[in-house]
Length: 137
Image (cartoon, rainbow, N blue to C red):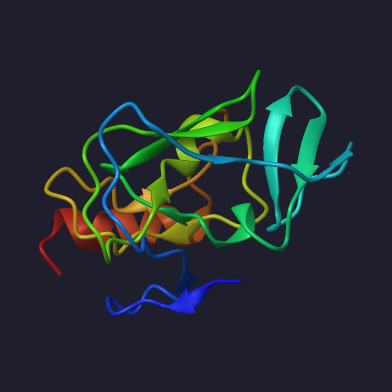
């Protein structure tokens, strides 16, 4: 289960030991379903894996330290990850549409400010959030 992470983004997964870039961090597993939810990862068009015990707690990052290989369902380190770091993936790279779009607070230098699926456009709340960010608010 996830833990409350220090940066205020909610419950996430924190490493106990360091991981080298390119290493397998975890083998993901869950129940295959045709319905997306906040607990699923997209495997393909109309196909999702539900995992409320582990994958559910992978937080979003615009510069993530992990990526998911959909074919093997392995979580791979994109770079070296130090002990105590929160594991993150880019939701915009894994999902066609999110169950809920949200304002990003990942803190990455290239943060996109509003997170949505790769086939979505910002909803009204997203348009307003992006305008605020562009205005420097």
